[in-house]
Image (tube, rainbow, N blue to C red; front, side, top):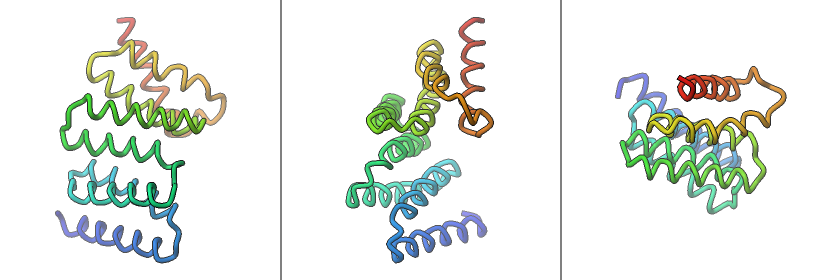
Length: 165
């Protein structure tokens, strides 16, 4: 780990601890999830697993069910970074989508569906990916310039091109 990265990791740990001391557990959970996702993306798997474990403990012990979709989505990110079986990654993403749907959390459903659509695309299941993501994206009428919606729209467009070509 490079010096700057080690400093950042230490800073994240301190931030999480401080949020927990303040009893700002929602924000501690969000920071754990964000750190786990970023850590996995940068190859810091031990840290990513630790932050994911901390998030899971907070979600389960404090009844933060509203964080369940993101917890499952980030679990899939960490599993993917660890080169876990795509069936395992996909199962985690389906749990995330189901949790979002149970809560009528459309934004969470969009993020989770976008992640699963990418996985399906990478497996050559273009039509299945398109069938999953298109209706979720179509349910949004505003905010089309927001990054998650832009990413979903770009993915849908590339899936349509791949399906027709």
